[in-house]
Image (cartoon, rainbow, N blue to C red):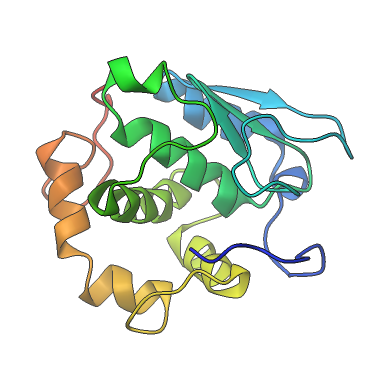
Length: 171
């Protein structure tokens, strides 16, 4: 993912439009918490700063202006980690390309678990935000070039072989 510039005007779905409750419910299914941050306050554990979600331990931090794709990405970082590593995370979850790819794939799939969001919206928002994939778009990567990420998630019990989220999730 590319480092953000001023993206306050980028048209992506923001957490305030979705509401905190659906996102908190989804994260709770995976043993994660969602901690709301007041408007204008710095987001704890945010790698990029600005309105990007942050992670510390088992908690994702976000404001109403945080993009939903960012919240799902940071939650995905926590989900792909073994429990013993997850507890130690503060801001930067990984330097592993495999884990980053799995996180991007998982954030797309998690979009389908949020009412009224869906994977298509998450992929469009990822493109609008500036994620870069060698095939040119999140959708092209997801559909044509992400078999390693998908296999990684299946091997770790986060996805079923049909690509659906494992339920209950393996933590």
